[in-house]
Length: 223
Ligand code: Z5A
Image (tube, rainbow, N blue to C red; front, side, top):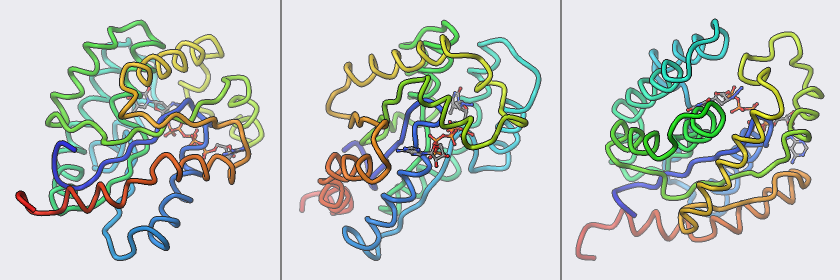
């Protein structure tokens, strides 16, 4: 642990099931693992006025160059960490966040050809060096993800990134795998292709030490 509170990020390609699993995890944590502890759920980009504006700009706006995209995601992240994530962690809370700098590494790095290491270093700059204590990576084949999203009936307003095609998502997925292989202690890699209950059980097993870790992080130094 590198600071107070606990920070857990969910990662994966679109449709991997992050939203579904975050909801289930929070329910379980509140009921069984850490009743009474403050749990804050956030998403990137978003969580601040600027972050929501950037989200709208990026997901619904005109195509932009990879570097402009990268910097917009980082600007939104900088605001979110300064205004919300770091102060919330400082209170000893558990923050669960849908996406993080690993999304930028995967989408703008692997997907659009920018330097992954440079992206992660910039991510450290804008987050005060606070990487997630755990990253749950939901692995899903891009074809299966596309079928899920089609089934959701979002064809009319499917955002620009989702429209980039399977090859793009294969590069994104491969970059996620490389990030997980590079940091095996940080990543909890989960097969997202199973039914939601089975995925949830694997997520819970991978985060089994979360309650203890949060308690340790909240304990005053020297205890
Ligand atoms: N992006 C980026 O490029 N760079 C960055 O730095 C950051 C983000 C931070 C965010 O969009 C976009 O921004 C994203 C990356 C890019 N790309 N796009 N497009 P978003 O937040 O709006 O979208 P998302 O994060 O990809 O969420 P999503 O599409 O809603 O997917 P999800 O949250 O992972 O999945 P879900 O909503 O839980 O499930 C999707 C559907 O599958 C839904 O109908 C579920 O009922 C179903 N589902 C879920 N789990 C299962 C299982 N296990 N089996 C069967 N069906 C399931």
